[in-house]
Length: 247
Ligand code: SF4
Image 1 (cartoon, helix red, strand yellow):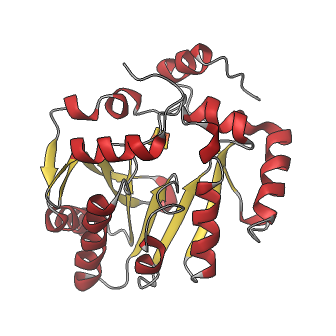
Image 2 (cartoon, rainbow, N blue to C red):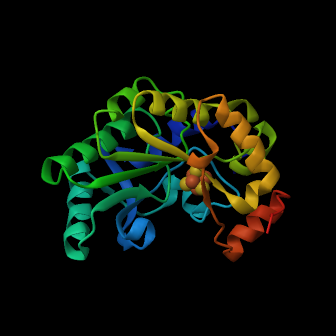
């Protein structure tokens, strides 16, 4: 049982222990996906947040209980490269959970990036993250800045501290960390941008988050807006947390 709200940094440490074995990490799927015009995708297990609208809620609630396999960085890179070749894609990504939980998972990610770029330097790598550890982790941003074709999409979970807590399950005092991580990446020259879920934010929430982002010198036109996949389990979880949708 996970009591809400929780400390997401503490939870990140616990989740990292559950999904890492040395530098190998739990993944549950490798697939071609239609997003970004076609992209090879590796779906991870383990996230420090527990968002009400997470389509991977069960796995992220109990990452220690899944029977998914652990993959070394080289195995992950190889599987992605096979999909790229088979489908003729020029993009790869990690999705399904949070790639960066701490030092160990960061090192795994770093080696995946290195292995991919050693073989195919022309690929675009999209890192989908909630940004929490990038705003608090030691030196992660600087190490990522060496990868020229890396794009980092930071999915923001709330437009103020209350909505952040309601949506992510994390204590409200951590609201600013993902935006700090985003600002740090942009300053380091990384191609990074914020993304939000329209139905959760609504026009008012979008106005508020744009005000927050201004403080990090991020312009409104850089905000990516995505739309909710209304799976029954997602709608049920949103209802349980009394979150109403903007349609
Ligand atoms: S940050 Fe993403 S993966 Fe993590 S719980 Fe939220 S929606 Fe799911």
